[in-house]
Structure formats: C-alpha cells, structure tokens
Length: 162
Picture 1 (cartoon, rainbow, N blue to C red):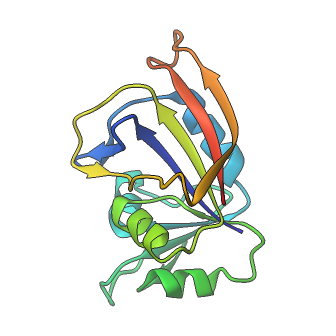
Picture 2: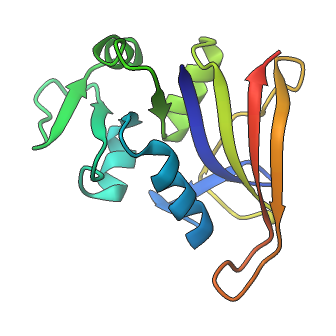
C-alpha cells in the first residue's frame, strides 16, 4: 500500500522557503502516529527541511545527486528506485515534497491519499497537485475547529482510488 500523506491549504499550498507555512500540533501528532514503524520516502529538500531521520521510521531520500549520503537513511536516485527499495513493506508513505507528490500522482503510483486540509489559503512557493475527484474518492473525513494549540480549522481526509 502506497500512501501519499500531506498537509495542504485550501489553495493547495504546501510550503514556502523549504518550510511549512503553519504549525498544527494535531497534524504533527497524527503524522507521527500514522507513519511510525513504516518506510517514509521523500525528496532531498524535504529531508533537509526536517534535518534528520525521523525516529522509528526507515527514511529513503530521493535525490539526483549520486554522491549524496546521510547517516541513518537510505538513498535512491529516482522515485521508482525508492519504491523498489521498500517493495517488501506492507505500508509505504510518500511524505513530500511537491516534485515527489507531482510525480507520484502523475505516474499513478499511490493507492491512497491521507490529507490534512488546512481551512485557509496561504502564500506559498510549492503546491500540492490538484486532487482529481474522478480518480480519488473521499472515504473518511474528520473536521476540527481551531483551538488554543491549533490556530486554523482543519480536516483529516482519506481518499482511495475510484
């Protein structure tokens, strides 16, 4: 099972200057719970914005740089190579960034989408691809209001291929 997991704004904004635009502790907690114990695949820029391998997960970094090495991480030079490295895993998470999301969806490689939708529009320099509702069916949704820890209204939405 290959799952694309992302937090996006209503205008599909993902981030700016290689960083998240918002801080939603509930989303970070959910991300940790969902991905722990699994393989996570990401582009080099996403890894560098995180800064280190995430605990209790196997990190595969996708980069075109043949000399790139990071302690505690596996390195792949294409999305296909990364998926091949993780093929024995029951659950694989694609966690970003924008180029990796775009390629995954364009090549129809994902089985499901796990989206945190932040109910606001943001100025960004990277965006998530538009989710084609003809290809993806919403299967679960949990809506939350902003609170003292989470500044914006948000929803956790799961999609399966139609």
